[in-house]
Amino acid sequence: MKRRAKKTAFWGLCGTVLIACIVSFEAPAADLSETGSPLLSIGGAGSMDDQTRAYLQDNVITFEELGDLVQYYNPSYQQLLGSVMPMVDAGKETASQMRSSDTLEMMKESRTELLKAMSEMDPNAASPVEQMAYQQTSAMFQAVNTGIRGTEQGIKAISKASGSIEDQTRDLRAQTLYSLTSAVQQMFIGYHQALASRDLCLAAAELSEAAEQSAETQRSVGMATDNDVLSAQQALLSAQNQIISLDNTLASLRQNLYLMTGFSYDATVEIGEVPAPDLTKIDAMNPAVDITRAINNSYSLKTLDDTLKNSKAGYLTKEERKKEAEDEIRMQLEALYQTVLTNRAAYEAASTTSEAAALAEESSRRQYELGLIGRLQYLQTKAASLQQKMAVDNASLALSQAILDYEWALKGIILSEETTLAP
Image 1 (cartoon, rainbow, N blue to C red):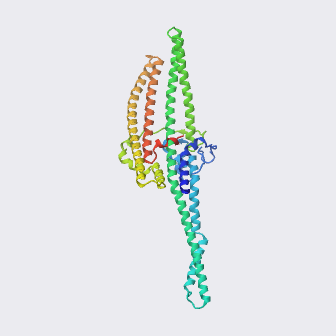
Image 2 (cartoon, rainbow, N blue to C red):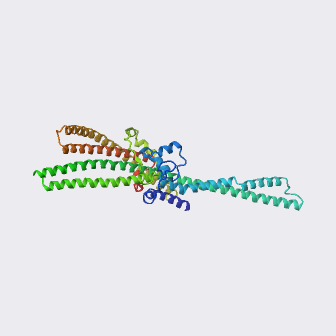
Image 3 (cartoon, rainbow, N blue to C red):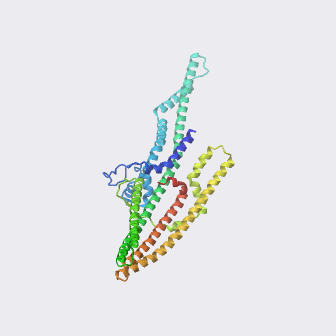
């Protein structure tokens, strides 16, 4: 029961580790004295080489380095390591000390000497004194030998216990690292989606301002009403409010990205772009083949296996539950693959439409510069082009996310199961 309770506690920690990062983590001030980097000195970064450290501390958060930033600097992951690894290390250290201790060596030397002494004695000697000496030597040998066996069994027990804890926490550490990394990747993509929306809102505000000025001009010559002007003013106010709202969203996402990658919340670090989706990865996907890898790596199945080992259910019932869980993963992987295909089609269609809109905007800009059309008409074309560009950006980000979801599934993380972990 104790072992089962420990495992339950470990897996329960994984379900709260992400939330704790955002809700309860209070970032200390950044230390720039040595490295010039605002990365926090949380721990876990000591094992990285100088090249990796320089790569992560260049004051630019790139999409490609998110996994390393989480592994070496994420406060929740470091907290997890700090809570479980000392137990493993302490067990190994204790076993090592016992194995190499002077006491154990002295006991083994004493056993050898006693055994040698017994070999020189006659247990059937006629002299009672010799018989008593042999019996006392034999009793001492048995006592020393029992002590050695007990010590060695203790060493084995401690080694086994620390190994068991290490095995129990290995999957937890990997799952937590994967879950944190996937959450940060989603947040990174979400940041750029909000950024694209802000660009469109800026264009909408510029268009609304021009429309308001046009409405006021038309009203002055009797070609528009007060309601027309009021409607244009409300559209402008709405666009401005959306910009303010998006600025707040971007600030929140930026701070959370900083915290989850080990920076102080008020750092001034550049956030890089999301790479264009790698279409060659899609061509390499094959759910019928990839399902084996997804099942072998599935953390939900590993948890189920642990549960079934302690279950009193019959063999057939256990096998049925495992098959149901594997079938569920198979359906989820196929659904993720279909999402990838759907998003690729949307991305390709949006790209084609955006190219046409960009050509229309360029033509409109030239006409505006030549005085053939007014500013309002040009801004309408510009806004339409930006809207199509945002559609491409969103389609690109959605496709990138879909590809990531599929790749995480192959690593054992089905994101539909992990949504409660996302901050």
